Image 1 (tube, rainbow, N blue to C red):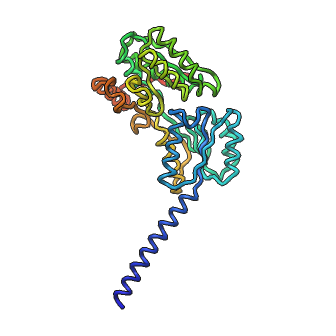
Image 2: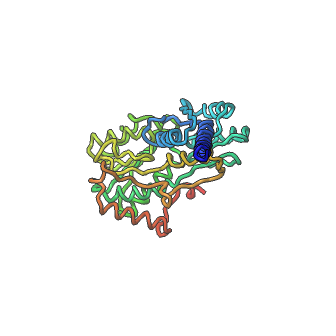
Image 3: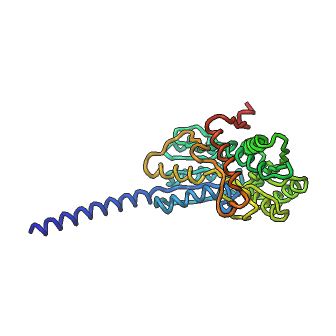
Length: 335
């Protein structure tokens, strides 16, 4: 009788635990998340790809229901965000600064929904703004570019000509001049509309021109258009620097490094907080101290990014974090 009682208690305990796990699983699965990408699309191997990676990681690990949509036109963002908010999505993630104006209109109309936006500051009790210190990461890769340059000329190619990308450029040029005050930095932008994020042929044309003018390293902050810069690097056997995601693998030995902007980590954290009921609105900044921005080293670039270069780059990172190096910020320069 005693054995039966113990067996019954054990079985009951396991049943309670199993029920708890099931309820938790059902609770997580019931959280519906929508991811709205910009025109670069989920396969840009850069900014959107990082956001998509973070969301799909959350889908696998947290069991959420995920819907991903891609804008075909910048004018569609408001309609898309409102349509998703009218449905049963608990958290809606707007990826990219181009969605800021649309989110400012939509979020207040749906106070019961949670929103997050990457690269823009949108105020609201239900909006989380995920911002990055891009200029600091760009400073570090600019320093690396100057270390690698033999010509004393570097290039920068931006996607859409907006303050955010000017911020990349300013940080990159400052980092290069920190290493070599006499270095020259050429710059071009692909366009002034969202089309600029997905125009590899134009990016390749601009990159080839910069290489022909003497640049031997080009940093591209241009979304999917960066693939054109990599093709130009391959044609000329010169270096390129990737952006947002680790792109070293795309042209091994020719991608000197990649300026990492860990959108995937920030997106995952926002989803995790929504799932656990701990979602917080407000501004969240990611930079060098929390490795929210960084440079990439792996088996694909370790031969071209020497140990000495890495040592110097890491020292520069430490000095920026400690406040010994002040990185110019395009946002501040406009005030």
